Image 1 (cartoon, rainbow, N blue to C red):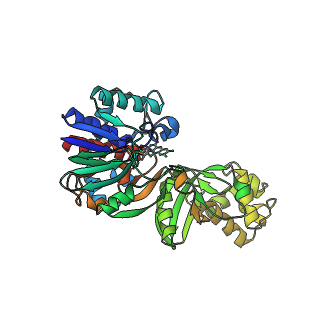
Image 2: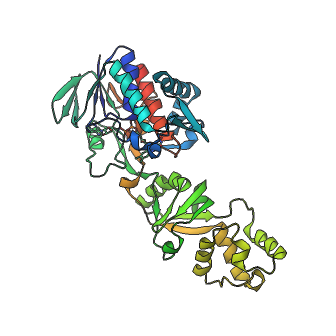
Image 3: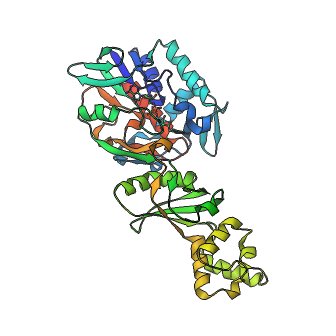
Length: 397
Ligand SMILES: Cc1cc2nc3c(=O)[nH]c(=O)nc-3n(C[C@H](O)[C@H](O)[C@H](O)COP(=O)(O)OP(=O)(O)OC[C@H]3O[C@@H](n4cnc5c(N)ncnc54)[C@H](O)[C@@H]3O)c2cc1C
């Protein structure tokens, strides 16, 4: 059985290796001059390829039930076994899996070695322009037309591919699939506040909660990075896809940031601290727990004199200060865009595939990885899904 896999990235190679080990003749078509270009960028070049807390709560998708079914202990074990089989030694840091070498090239090289051992045909510089399906598939590329029995779409998404054309959503639409508009995810968020220049460079532990049209959506805890355009950090990136979707739908997207995540009630805490340190100014009282630059931003924004002591503040000033420290409101107006996003939220509607990732729309077509409407948190979840879905198809195709 001849199988063509469109795209030579993360999901493609694991799928090709599994299918080829089962005796299939597999061809990978990759538009770039080298496969797995994006994989080399992952985890800051270290490739965070999996997570020990793999479960569906770390993903957003149009079909959560399917994810619940797919991300199970069996598939997790199969994926980790696969990487061990090809020679990857893991280094696990806070649940994040990296190759022990701490370099993404290791994963790329070991996948390539196994693909070459199995004589998988890797055609690079081959841009798929269209796919036509009658009894067989005709794949039209910039070089030649190929005929095959089964096709796997493993083309990833249009995130972070600067100045490159991404045509696969249109090809899939023509084949009858529905595309949920891809929006940037795992991306930095922008606002339009005057104080951004003053808070640029600050890092702080925080709990960040997203409110959409005043309704709570979700919250994440971690380190925020305050910048001259707005805000970043893993916890912010994790909710950025939902912000991008909300902005697309003209919703009001507001982050409420708790800069005192370990304090239950900021107001009571401030009263307690001031009781025991009556001689300290507000800044002196708080600078050991809140970055002093951030304190100045908050005080300036609310016209509170930094030299005042707690007891000298008005009742309103005290409440404002407590609120700003525990629920600082930041209106998000845009994201840093697809070119800066690690993944997209959106893609082929996951309701249109079966639990073996075969298409419900086109016979003998399979879809794996990021081309599907599945996006995960930072921490190896996106590669994790690419690998799990690739292995499932490689096993059954
Ligand atoms: C900077 C950055 C850091 C990241 N870090 C992490 C991380 O640490 N952990 C993690 O889990 N995820 C990370 N990701 C996300 C992760 O890289 C992707 O989710 C993952 O690579 C998706 O795998 P895939 O196989 O679906 O697609 P890809 O790996 O993107 O592969 C798709 C391939 O298809 C090819 N292609 C597309 N269209 C065509 C066409 N028409 N014809 C032929 N070929 C085509 C592309 O050139 C590409 O090589 C990161 C992403 C970026 C950008």
